[in-house]
Image (cartoon, protein in one colour):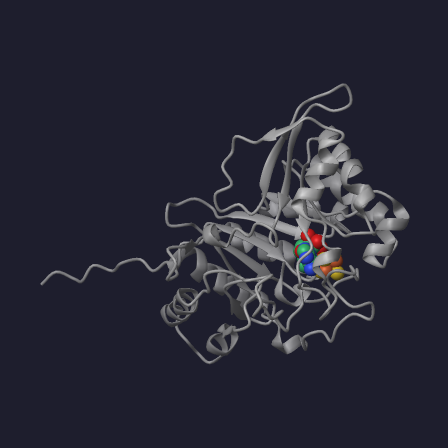
Length: 345
Ligand code: SAM
Ligand code: SF4
């Protein structure tokens, strides 16, 4: 008798999407208090025993990559550099092999503080790329948005990432009305001159409860209008696909060599139909969308003795129930109870 053929599991949902990109939050803690993400006084952090250990994270990654078809892993938080064992976690993840035999693509989303001292070790451990958040090049505006005067530390992290060869360095900027619209063009110029890939992010309702207001959100259309006053833009040839950013090609001029600029228009032009993401929070909860209001408790199953196969099945089941779209702007939309830092952006 021939053995039954085992069909490999994948993270498919009922809307024709398959998740291959995993966001892993390594901590909910942070050394900044960005106004769009956290209240000034910070949050009640998860108790230490509720946060997944390094061994648990590596087991989850092993299942995700080797059993569920994940090919990209992004470490995030809170601030992932606050996890002292980040280098060991990256090194462990780099040992994994995807179904096609390659290493998973490993990247880090960070505020960049302290990155200058660790980026070489992270690159040696197998990190492929960094996304560094930088909302202003003006020291006072940066400090007002992040509620901490740390612009110099972020700039040191950016320069060190470039020197370490983690290219292209990517930069994320949230633009807020009345706060940092004046930074739209200076941030573009700074990134174009250095070959960094800048992505502006529309402000999403994921910060302190009720702090979001559609009228304070600077839209993709407004960002493009500001850019078009300074640069010649054309639609980039690369299709958007599952990537959240819409890309524009900037023509070179006497001050910069040209390059790509992106906008992540999560509110005004959501990319839900092409989403290929799945997420795990620092306290071991599976979320299929940033805006999910339900979670699946992977930690309880992990600590309750579930086998790798059982954990993979639990994850695949959760993903199969992923909602078609996040519905921001629709009448029934309700912001999730967790804020961005506790989800993992
Ligand atoms: N601390 C790291 C950082 O700031 O890059 C990683 C975590 S942070 C939650 C990830 C990304 O989410 C950052 O680029 C941040 O700007 C973005 N973000 C946080 N709150 C947001 C919101 N309400 N709307 C849009 N983007 C947000
Ligand atoms: Fe911290 Fe990142 Fe949230 Fe800013 S956006 S408070 S750096 S987690």
